[in-house]
Amino acid sequence: MKTRGIMERTGFENLRVYRLAEDIADLIWEIVIKWDWLPQDTVGKQLITSADSIGANIAEGTGRGSFADNRRFARIARGSLFELKHWLRRAFKRELLTEKEVASLQKMIQELTPKLSAYITSIGKKSPASSEFIPDA
Picture 1 (cartoon, rainbow, N blue to C red):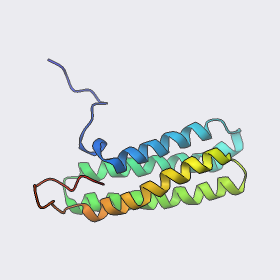
Picture 2 (spheres, rainbow, N blue to C red):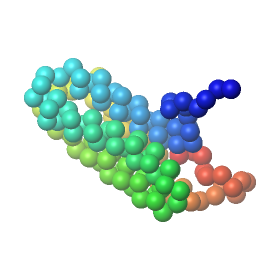
Picture 3 (cartoon, rainbow, N blue to C red):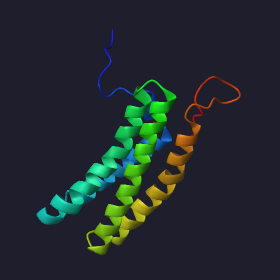
């Protein structure tokens, strides 16, 4: 009999919005880890924390057990996304990001932003054909 491991997928991990948040957080880590100490300790920590917070709040919200809590945590995730955008602007202004990094992050954020808003709107709504959450978030 196989035991369930900590890394086994649960419901929120199948959401596209959550996977995008993970991808952004992983890319931010890969970028910041190469910086010198001062940029890492100031802008870098803020970037990592805000990026990690997006997915963490999506995960926590789905585990809370109510639509209201789930929606509240998804809104917090959206706040973290906007905070991330702020710190990326600071990093860009301070010439800490390459053009390739900026292009990759812009593309990912442009996809995540409307998906996260759609996810927030979909929480608690049922699709007409089933009793499941609307899955395209």
